[in-house]
Image 1 (cartoon, rainbow, N blue to C red):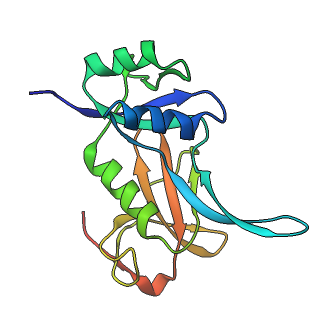
Image 2: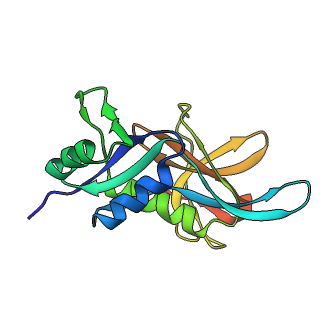
Length: 170
């Protein structure tokens, strides 16, 4: 049985969507964080899907296939490395599931930051489309934000009314 893990792969700038398509066609499970936004031009508006984390895609595969992907897809530059072990960073399944859930169900824009954030109170969303999501409460510029931490990578954050949250114990 294959021992699959989530890996963060570096991709050439503006090649994220094409790389995701190639991986899909190869039968490789992957995740490209996209968010739909309305772009305004002088003469029109258009809905577009924007990449949230530029130059990065996540793949779920085993170590052997990860190495084959690096050799066979020129737009993939490398794998994020864990500074402690100097090996490819493995993102835990639970972290990826929470991140994907946040992107799928959030009505507000999800922002991503690699700035180190101090752990806040653990919270659970009790109302709205993200109901059941667990994360950390972060207060930025007086607005309630819920953060999902991806170790090695940073945090995905979404703004939400404080009334939608309840404090949980670790």
